[in-house]
Image 1: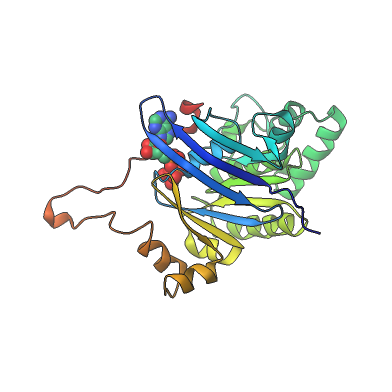
Image 2: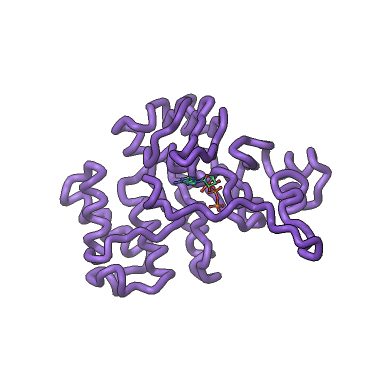
Amino acid sequence: MTELVPALELRSLTKRYDDGTLALEDFDLSVPAGCFFGLLGPNGAGKTTLISAISNLIRVTAGEVLVFGEPADKLAARRSVGLAEQDVNLDRFLTVEETLVYHGGYFGMGRTDARERAAEMIDVFDLRAKAKVRTPKLSGGMRRRLLLARALMHRPRLVILDEPTAGVDVELRHELWLYIRRLHAEGTTILLTTHYLEEAEELCEEIALIGGGQVIARDTAAGLRERYAAASLTEVYMKTVGAGRLRDPRQGVGNGASPRAPAAQARR
Ligand code: ATP
């Protein structure tokens, strides 16, 4: 049965950073509960800002963010969200197991429940051999797996994956998607940002194309292809948010793209 309350409801959301950068302007978006939803857009489009607002990591300038009907800064909303961030932000003094158990405690899980769930996540993400190892001693792929395990620790109803497969090897990517698909089949809402458009095309039930802090288009991949008379999502992307961002270098003009965002840590 589909839930009537949307997983996510953003109303006239505006975020202006302290230095004056307008990252989101009057942004409206509703994501139905249980949906596998893709958020696509070029560097600097506002995706991470949006995710930070949903996860209550930044103060919004204006507008409303509701998670399963609750304001994003309320405990119920915060406990509904599991975020795997783009930046690997693990505590270097904690082991794999401690990382998960502490996270569980932070999200209100009892000690026994947190230990059992941590053991489950360690097995799911194939981290058993490293359970007692501190995070700086993990490989890059293992750290990414731990980030995902941590995001899922408290059994969130909305899982946000911010470029989860950036720099991840083929095997891990495959395993990761198998697991995420299973979670989704069990009813978890997934919000995904990725620059791998084929991945979004294959996985997402609906896609929003974001540009300049606003939604440019939103539909199924097939609906978007039809609307823009395009053979692929990549073509849709190039016709919409990707259009005209790079100039011919022979003209001696710089790239019009926004600079990469500073680390997520810095903006909290
Ligand atoms: P990417 O695909 O590169 O991760 P993004 O779509 O996630 O990009 P955001 O990180 O949300 O984009 O950035 C949106 C805009 O807000 C950019 O112009 C960025 O430079 C700016 N921005 C992000 N964080 C801050 C901050 N802490 N202070 C000032 N401006 C910021």
